[in-house]
Length: 439
Image 1 (cartoon, rainbow, N blue to C red):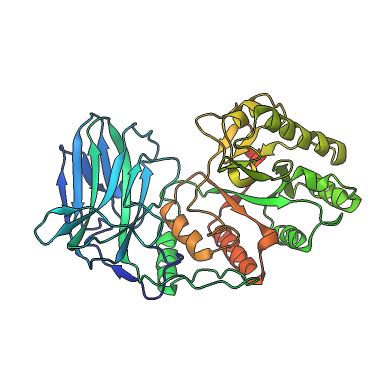
Image 2: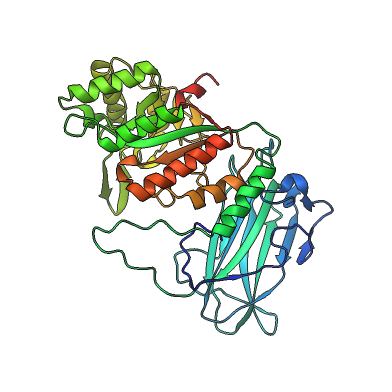
């Protein structure tokens, strides 16, 4: 598990034989047609080699890791990285990854409930960006070993999917440290040796043969604060100007409804100077609960509700700022089919950040890489978590990286600066979301 995670100091990494596939399939047992399971340089997500699974014809296959000894009652986690092969479209079938416990007699045993809310299995179909699933289960009574199994049911073609960097950890079972009221959430610590190794790997092969990435700094929840621009947002704007990079601020429409001439003039000036893109971040950023379900401004609300909110924001932007927003990102990143319908009828919005790539509403959708972000967890900039995700995701065309400056204290700000300066050193191009409008 990566160094930026929230593991306790007493958690114990359990070395998995050849979990990075640098030694081919040594330590793994495959049952598959010829070339359905291969270790290839082009499949690497970290290091020089990775696992490629591809079965154009529906066929059953499996790959088992070498067994690890376990203690009954202890919780074990497994992480790995997976991605659709570069330039390919993944087949409809999934590769299942599962934690398999066995007794000393070699018979499989059902996994017990983990001490954290995670499942012991996941289905992988791929996507635009590499993913980093986390599995967890407790070793049941009588368990002696744990094996990781990758398999395909044979009902549909699968792949081409790349897998890499499998890791297993035994959790301590200790509860996380209690955060007292008013205390800032701590930034999970990073292992300096791990960070150094990642930085060296990236330096040796920065883009995996591709161009440097484009970066959209998607900064959420901007609006007038007592008629003015809050100091934390001014700090971001000054920093972006000093670094000569583009940033984007998501405006919550209702927050500029009041009389706020100072806020309006500052926003107009920044827009005219081309330093900051201001984008549509909903009308009220509201949420509620109905019948036990979470309802968000653009997820679960009616078509009429969403239509009104989509329209009212740009109407107010035109009246107060003199321009309409071209890019949209929903509050909480929650959207549904009504959102796509509303967007299909909107002539102002051209780009939908974190939208639905299967139902775009006729807009340019910029997808989300959960692994490459400013914050991990939400509200907490985390250089260690960012670097882990970036190292595994090199070669991607772009990253839309979300942040919430109003929640950043000095320590979090320093982590944000470190992330940005690293990207500058990588020759990343900082762009507006709207720059993708014509692509």
